[in-house]
Length: 262
Image (tube, one colour):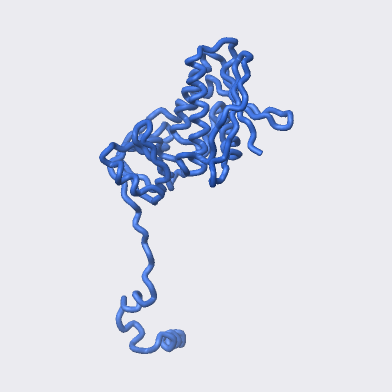
């Protein structure tokens, strides 16, 4: 049964309403982003509903996943990744390949608020035991290390184009075959129809790649995107004419037997 994921916003008795709303938007955005990346569907596999709102201070909100019709429910993986990633980012580790640049941006916004409100917490209640991951100022510095653009250069990546978004700027995601990570690729309106025609295809994307201090690509300004042509091996019939007279006019079996006797 899907469990409820809670967000505690800071540790102060009072939280400005605008800050509270922004924190919830970041929290929901991270859940949706993980779900979209794990399910490889821009819509995600579930809808998140508020099931708990505690009016004590600090405020705590709980959300539960409702599976979308005729879709596999990935909420348990989202839950695990959410908690593990929050801990990894606080302690300075490297996040998993499910964590996109978009997710890190939202985590950075949430961690920024911890400087004024105190540490946030993401947790689930399970069998009387809380699994808690905090978001602190350490999280902020570690996320900035991952999201800060250190290198920029022209290049290409190859991978599957599995998600397109036109709601907040035109961009699509490619699962880079070399790193296994999601790369956000930005495109302009003139390229929209071409990009959409390549949805769920294996593609080569060329443009200006922006990488972090570890040299890991995080975003790309699109120049071109093209499908990867499938290469097929020639059939036996097609290969038979490559070298004329190779068997000296003899049946292949007889020719090979003669070679073995030499």
